[in-house]
Length: 344
Image 1 (cartoon, helix red, strand yellow):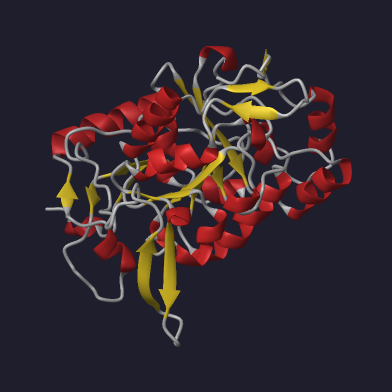
Image 2 (tube, one colour):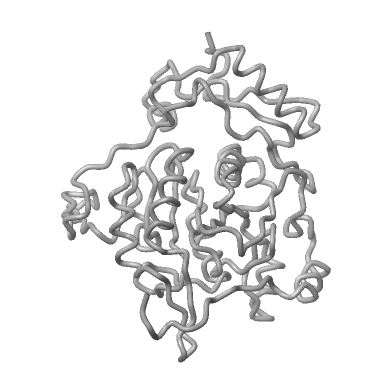
């Protein structure tokens, strides 16, 4: 650690009065209030790595996403990890934040997005790309990798629409290819070991981390399934297709294989699912009974992306379903997959 770093930085939540005044002026304050059943608000001083899962769509859409529920539980099950949530604000809250120069906050402890170590975006379809930029702007975080200071969080994305991440690569520090249950913990372990979570204030008032952004990105590139766009330079054909991708750093692997959750068939993550404060699109408990699909339809991106086909044994699924219903209070549960009727 540099000797000029004097005072450990301890971020505080947004002022309660300012938040309450904002909530009183928007159409659906339940989108931004937090405090849902099964939400987790940990003591910041006792946790090293702090994630904010930023879903780039309205609360009603994001809270229906099973992947968010799973990753939220996976990280919060570890005492030295913390995961909070933030959703894309509607236009009324956007206007209020800009007018009062307030940053977008997390639901659990109302910290500004810039106070976290990692911002994780789930990108399921391309129309959410613009919302990523809106959330970064409202969070007072640099839009592109080159604009971010070392004190800014790392901006990482995953999901089906970033299997080809190049259209949005300038705005992402790293991209997770494939399934995230295991890799989010590996990313946390690497960053904590190297000191990314340590932030201190220099005498000139500037915030610095215990690790440079460049060093953090090189470390992430060594994790299987993680693509760091700034370590590569694509060249394009005249029709806009990619001709080649050149590695700019020896730390960048020549090829990256997508991650596959090794324990999907035997273990169910996401038992204590979040129960929303307001009505959402899929307002029920959910359990995946299968990943992948037997059909192989050529028009279906998801059917190709989530290979190989994996089924949960009936006894594993039934036991997990009962546990989910007990922990949430829901009276119905959705058996989800790409084609549940094909479950053997």
